[in-house]
Image: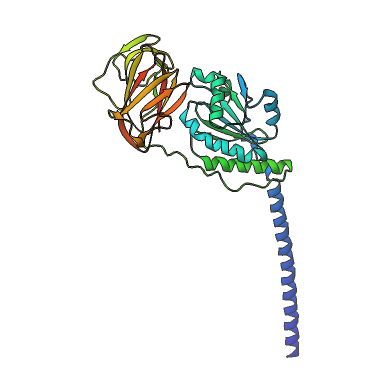
Length: 369
């Protein structure tokens, strides 16, 4: 009996000792595993395979620099996370993104973000630095803007869209690409991620921003009229001019009243000179009619004129008056720009008539939202 007890005690001691040794082994393994994880996390930047990313191209063919100089920009860009915003100031889609971009500049410029506006013009008047400078003042842009008048930087990025945002990390690799409006939260999270990578890599201690810019995004209509171009080259392969006289390149055409007004087409009266990117009113007065579907209507124009606008044969109702209408249904055009003439909460179809007084008035496009 005593021998059996002795044997049991010895067996118990052996088991307890074995369990203790195993516990120590597992504990050491856990510590090594956690240490390896920490090392892996700490060195995660060095483990990113950037061979699949393209390097951001150089800014080439720049005609003018606004809010900066070539030397200053070259110095600023070093070791920065860079958001390249390709835009043009008469593009409504570009304009709608600007509140977010300027807010990101305010929020992250001191943390290592550099925003560069690449202004690649659609129309000839957008090449004038005075016009672009007026636009950047209007929209509160104080980050560098470069005028890519010959679209050389546009081509270097292999771009085909307005607007487009590319984000390069602090080593110059393009890590993000977004076309058009929207995706604002996703874009800002990428900015935060790349700033964290930068600061860790450079050993900079900066508190990471967790919150996101909170701006209400414009909600597009599900069914809206397409952009309507007045230039014969821009409107090529688009059946948008309803007047039977049609486009006649580089000629002055007398357009007569049309009996039928189809949806998504514009109709003219008066004498108009046809250019590749626009039409110019040659007579003292003229009219434009169109039947559209949208909740917002914008017009891109140049040269001084007074426009009186009617909706379904009546002065514009108060609930439809756009931001740039000066009185109930008048728009004074005084500079080359985009003007908002109709703005409402809901999308609907309407017949709009614009009566124009002002020889030399030039119109480029209608855009809708």
